[in-house]
Amino acid sequence: MEAMIIPQCNPLASYQRLKVDIDAAISAVLAQGRYVLGDQVAAFEKEFADYHGGGHAVGVANGTDGLEMALRALGVVSGTKVYTVSHTAVATVAAIEKAGAIPILVDIDPKSYTMCPLSLQSALKAHPSGGRDVVVVVHLYGQPAVHWQSIADVAKSHGLLLVEDCSQAHGAEWRGCKVGTLGEAAAFSLYPTKNLGAIGDGGVCFMKDHDLAAKLRSLREYGWKERYVSEVPGGNSRLDELQAAILRIKLKHLDKDNNARRRIASLYFDGIENPRISMPAKYEDGRHVYHQFVVRSPNRDDLREHLKARNIGTLIHYPVPIHRQPAYEGRLPMPASGLPETEKAAGTIASLPMFPELEDDAIERIVTALNDWVS
Ligand SMILES: *Cc1c(COP(=O)(O)O)cnc(C)c1O
Image 1 (tube, rainbow, N blue to C red):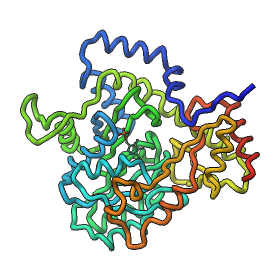
Image 2: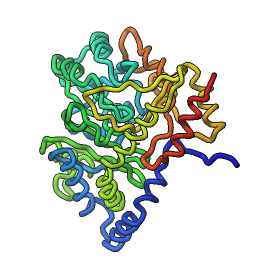
Image 3: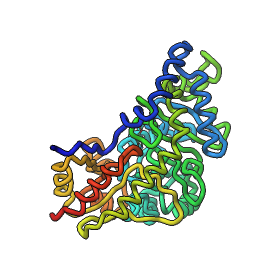
Image 4: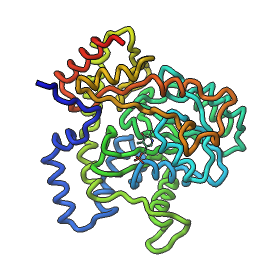
């Protein structure tokens, strides 16, 4: 008999597990009659802010919009420089350009895959900030940016604002603080496969500052201050009631789900023993929530074929660095020394199956397959 397929991620399993609650919530919203920016969105925003220890959450249509509007709300305008990594979802850089800003790319530290503060300094040297520019720090794979303190020090000395892209790190902590509470503002994608995922598109921004939140609320709906009166040019990026009702249920399960991911990671750490496979680095001062479990091998493509032949799904996050993609190649500023670690990572990484419902016998099969691999 052929082995059952183990997918790399599985949003359906999340729905099935919470089906009774989700179906009831959907029915209630349908019957209630208000479908966009209503009580469910307001309640979700309140609960999401409370989860982050108070402050303000603003629901939006997706993570890309959230990041763009957070930047705009902070005063980013045409020509503002925004320093960020090339090793991230293309959405990070797309959002920066949508806000009218110039993305300046920074290399990663090869162990954590998060922003390298030395490369940030090199980028600032090659492309100096004119003041009131921004650094967008990405907490990638569920790992809080491990060099946050050094990055914050560099940012401070250059007068740069810090914005967090938390789309892969809902509930992660750096030195006891939730990601999203470290910078001026944060954007979270709520795409179905994220640690906190809707059943469709969604996003949320978090910030401590009341006025900044008010700006974001206005930007997400035509620049309105009051209904039908646009104070600033805005757009439409609203969260709907169905998604908010579903997200309220999922938020209640977020810590438990993140613990399930951490448990799977520890089973991978305990079980995988293959000199050809490098495991993720572990850090003391963060709480990693394992959006992805990323291993590394010079023969990565062969490893993926080996797993695929055993019906085990993998993905690459991300196979082509942003500065090598057709839309961006050759036109984005970066340090004089380039982005060598970003390029090396893209050619050697693979993301193993990782979702809270992944069962022990599946994990065992994955571990065995990895240990059996001789390239
Ligand atoms: C998913 C993701 C986004 C984009 O979110 P969307 O909801 O798809 O717009 C942005 N940044 C990172 C790091 C992501 O993983």
